[in-house]
Each structure stands twice: as structure tokens, then as C-alpha cells.
Length: 228
Image (tube, rainbow, N blue to C red; front, side, top):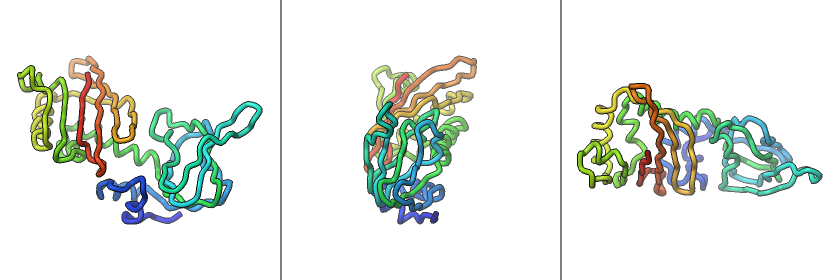
């Protein structure tokens, strides 16, 4: 295995446009690996400890079918991601994967990458405004039922621009001391992510919520919608 430089990682199609600070973190938990044909990456039921970005070669995704043995359901190649189960509890592979030909891939430590998301949750729980604001684009649009409650204006439900969002979150953190957030589930789309979570209130009550965040080509959040 070989350590990965940030410029090398940035050249991969899947990561184009990602901010340098995120690429730098990913480079720290990535290795460049080469495998021979017929190399098995994982089997259904195994623990998903890694995921890969294919740089060269092809990998067959398969499943076991009664009476038919292994059945290939998809073949992926250069520029694509191998493995998604690392992102979703219980972090267990649903299929198998075998190299069709010699391949070169970036291999990532799944637990370390999930730690990026855990760091954001921890930032909310300690009121770290600077870390909270890192993912947001200058022109971000924020919508939430909480805006009208915080502002006292029942018709105000949207905030535009990162400076206005920063001021709103700063005020919200001051007014909601003692609230503890727990991430329950994450759902990934083509240009968006949905975070399902629980808010632990100081009186012991729990409130559920789900936020949709849409990102631009630079992987910065341009739209954030809260749901309670």
C-alpha cells in the first residue's frame, strides 16, 4: 500500500470539486492499493471496514443466488466508488465484490471517514460555531419552522446568505443551551443528504427531526431545510 498525496486524490473523478480541507483529511485516511484479478474485496455479511474509489481496472458486484452460485449484478470501473454499506448501520456488506482484472484503487478507512460526520454532531453539542459553519456556501438558503419562533414573525421561514445564517445559529445556540443532538440515520442522494436525528431537551424530553442539505459542485451546502 502507498500513502496518497492530496493532488493525486483530487484528480479522481468522484472527488472533483471537493474543498481542499476535506481532501486533506481524506488523504490522511487513504492508501493506494493494487490487487490482482479475482481478488475478493468483501463478502455479503462481512463487516464494512473500508470503501474504495477505483482508479484503474474493473470490479464485479455479485450476490449468491440459490442454485446459481454467484450472480454478477453490476460492474464498476474507473472513477466510481466501491462499497456503500460502510455508511449505513449496521455497517455490514449486502453483496460481494471481486476484481475482474488487475485494479488500482484508493482504499479508505470507513470508521475514520464517518468520524467527519461525528465531528459535526459533536460541534453542535458543544456549541462550536466555527466548525458548524464550515460546510455552508456564501449563498446558502436556510428554511426552518424554528425561524418564525426565533424571530417572532410567523411569516418568516427562510434565511438567505451565510452571514445571516451564522447570526441565526449563534443566537439559537445561546437560547438552546443543554440540548443534545444524536444522529439516527443518514440518507445520501445525488446532490443531497438527509440527516435524521433526535434532540435531547434539558427536561429529558426528546424531539425528532430530519434535515435535507443540498450541495453544489464544490460540495458546499447551498440549501438546508429543517423538518420537525
